[in-house]
Amino acid sequence: MESNAIAPQDLVRKAVIEVAQLQESELLVVIEMVGELKKQRANLHRDKASEILQNAKIRAKNMAHLSREEVMEKFSQTMEAIRAEAIEKGIAIEGEWEGD
Image (cartoon, rainbow, N blue to C red):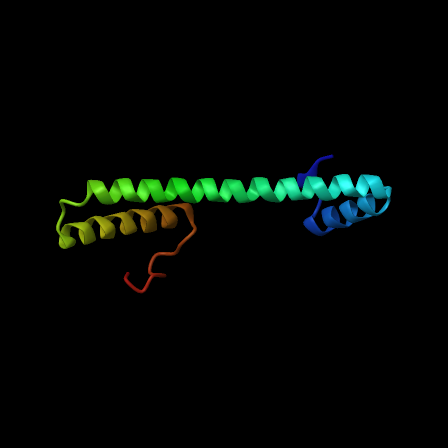
């Protein structure tokens, strides 16, 4: 089945219809599968959060020798680069940000 071609509400409707037609023993399997999917999703989020935290600690350690003014200048440069990239991609509009 090509899930990209099906609207989300139609996909949910189809899943509900299919699940409603299952026997009780098969429903238990579906419930277990859904539980496993939830655990996998939670683990992915936890792993990603851990990775982000680790990267932040490394960056903080690498910038510990800088003054507050130097850190703020790097922050401003990073924000400007992100804003310029967003404008280039059409995600943001020049002058949209109050700081412009």
